[in-house]
Image (cartoon, rainbow, N blue to C red; front, side):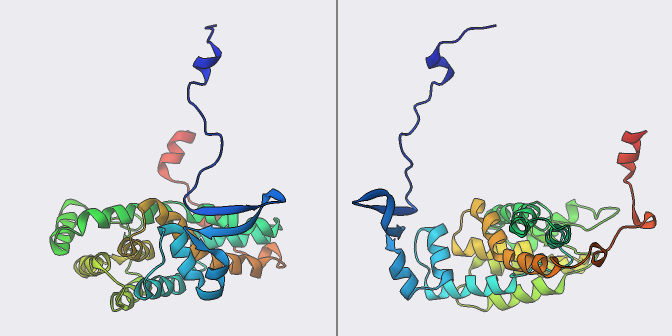
Length: 277
C-alpha cells in the first residue's frame, strides 16, 4: 500500500472560522457564543421585524437587498398562487403518506420537500427553466417555439415537456398556471421573462402544451434577479405550507384513508420486465 505524508493527504488549507455576507452577529461581551444583535445583509433584524414583511426579508435574505414595492408585490402574488401544489402532486402524496404512516410529524416537510426538489414538477425543473428563460428570452419567442415543435415529437406515453417549465399535464393544458401567468404579467413588477413565456405558451398551445407551475415560478424568479440555483429552494419554500397542511390533515386518519393500488393498476414498465427476466 502506498504511503503518503501527512501534508499530502490534506493539502488544502481550511478556514479557521465561518465567513458569511448573509448574516452578522455581534457577540455579547459576557458570552461570545450568544448574539446581542443580528443583521441580515446589514439590516438589523429587529428593525426588519418592526417595519418589513416576511416577503421583504425573504427577498433580502436570498437576493442581498430589499425589494422595490413592485418586486415585493410580484413575489407575494406568486407565493399566494403557489402556496399549495395540490393533492395530485407527488410531493403532496408523500406528505400524506408520511402522516398516515404515523411517522413523526416533524418529518412531514423534510420527506415531502425532498420529492418537491425533484425534476418532475419540482425544484430541479425550476432551476432548469430559469436557465432556459435566461438563454432564450434574448430571442424571439415565436421562432423558439416553432423551432422546438419542429425538432421534437410527443412521447408515445405520458406528458410532453417541450422545454423546462412548459408542457402538458395529464394529457392537456393545465389551466391554472396559464391564469396565474396572465395575472402576474399585468403587475408592474413583471419583466421580460414572464412576457416572453406568455408569447411562447401562446404558440405551443396548438399542440396541447402550455405553462407549468414550475415555468411560471422560474419566470418570476428570473425577472426578480434570483440565481438559478436559488430557484429550486425558493420554489420548495413557497409550496411548503400546502404540503404541511395536507400532511397534518392526515395525521389521525387510518391507513385506509389513502388509495391502495390494486393489481389491475400496478403496471411494470417493459424495460423493468426485461431486466427482471
